[in-house]
Length: 347
Image (cartoon, rainbow, N blue to C red; front, side, top):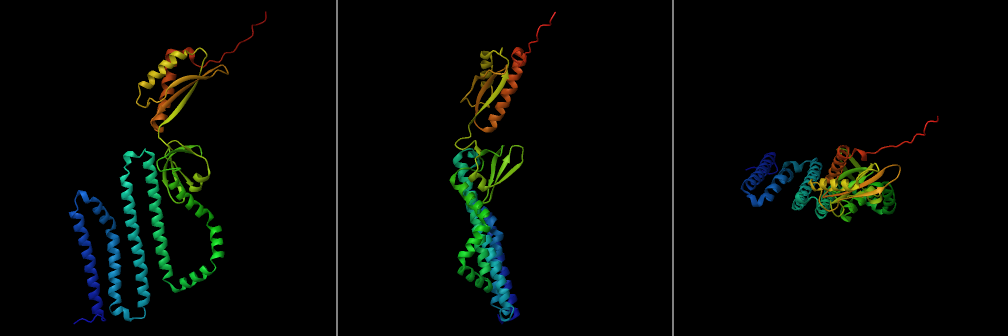
């Protein structure tokens, strides 16, 4: 008969731990293989958490196997047991982090990308992304705290720190002012609905789309594929333009300087024909007015509207190209002309 306090008992316990780990793996595969279309979320959950669960089960099993057999009798066992404790805490935090991320990703999946242009959809997705990061940070902080306080020396230091919490809090507040400011600003951005992932903005003279909002910075995807990275405090303290605050629909204007002989009525008719012949125009606004007549030129303003900023930009370019070409071909006399009157030569 095998005695558990012997090394043979240790080998037997390790074998049982390995079998338990294999059983967990088999159960996971069975769940994945038998899940139908209606339980795809369960399959996705199992696939995502499988390595984390297996690692946690293996650590607990080996810890128990060593603690109940021969290794527990040696002087070095408390140190090894402490290592198992730290690894188990970290593995458990990894599992909780995966579980929290999966749940929040499931909620985000309800807000389909088909409605990405709707302000409410962008607001919910932004808030859920920030909540996911907050949950992961909180789990990591708690896990690190548990690991640190498992050392008696750290507990003693923690007691002395708590005793002088007033001085420490002041020093920490001054040292982490920028970091905490960005953290608070990031949470404020997510829940105040001032800026959302997918919003079209003009920041620092750059036109782009909000690509990511973290707890410390915001990434703006500039139209030419550059990335503008700004601290969260910027959006909480500096003015910026938002072109999709309430709706993605937007208006635009095109200005042209032409000669005084320009036929305004013909220009207006050609402009409306151009708008009606393109899908970029949403039909909300379109008009031609003369806004200036100084410096020897007439300034014409073309007003357009589109369903979003992308169509607006393309429509503005189309109006410029087509109207310039039309004036060149049909009314060259309307092109800008500089007139100089020379004095008559003296006889």
